[in-house]
Image (cartoon, rainbow, N blue to C red):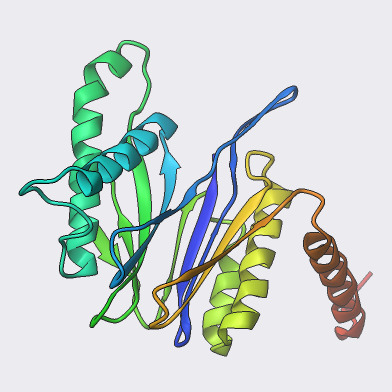
Length: 243
């Protein structure tokens, strides 16, 4: 399992991904799931993935091949809008799954992956898309400006809190990390290190930061949440139960 989230705010975009790919008692694996794709000075693309790891890696390799191979073919350097990039990634994903479906079917494995694509092409608004294994997509809306993939249920409330209160980019980073921590606490298959990406509108640069398992930032955030939640419970009105 995995957990990746992305938010579109008035000031920019936030991306956060865990790195855990399996979590047996004595076998914990980690791989990066947040990827920055360099495709030109006028554009920035961030790709997050959940699902079959081999499919994700092959899609990333195909993206890199198309960017670095001269000729008249589609690539992220040539698309004019972010939705065209979403369609391109969806098509690559479908091709990879089709190529390996027969072999994987013999062992009952699923080759599909789901992607979150975010970023900006100069002249367009920064945006975030959810690209399905079937190759189609949806984009975030003003009323629900976030996407989650993987283990989504435990951290959803925190993201809704950010939307409801219309927080700024810096506060939204704290909320995103809180969403990740609550998910990791509820599900062993989600865990650190965590990869954070922050994109400020028009910058065409992604600020990246990795938070390791014993990060002081995570420790302080966790301790502060526990203390404040305990204080909040103490301030709730008493509930009288008839005997």
